[in-house]
Image (cartoon, rainbow, N blue to C red; front, side, top):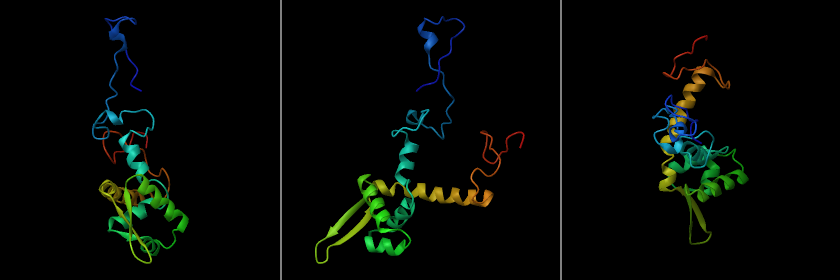
Length: 164
């Protein structure tokens, strides 16, 4: 949904000029194009698409392991020993369905299955790196407390708002 319109001093409510959209002054670093100009989460919003790709407990760790190269199911189980079979199977199935990972079976006995990131899945690597860095900074500045710290002014990171 677009911004509410304003009525210009020289227009009337029934004229076309009265219904022009007003820019919200989107931060072009956060919203570089129209796909992000939304007032609610939508599947076509690039940020929501990226978050959906890494959502779910253990997903980021499975992606991290796959970023090292192809892994067998057993190799993933050994790398993440506290991850249950049910959750690992679910995360791998979801990643394959999203086109982020591929599942390959090799002939022979027993049949071996390996999982690897697709080119699309490899796009998540910089996101995971930045999430790690940001998480480290958040933990360093406020521990594990949700919402710790003072509000930040929109004119710069680390700038405290008035009244803090």
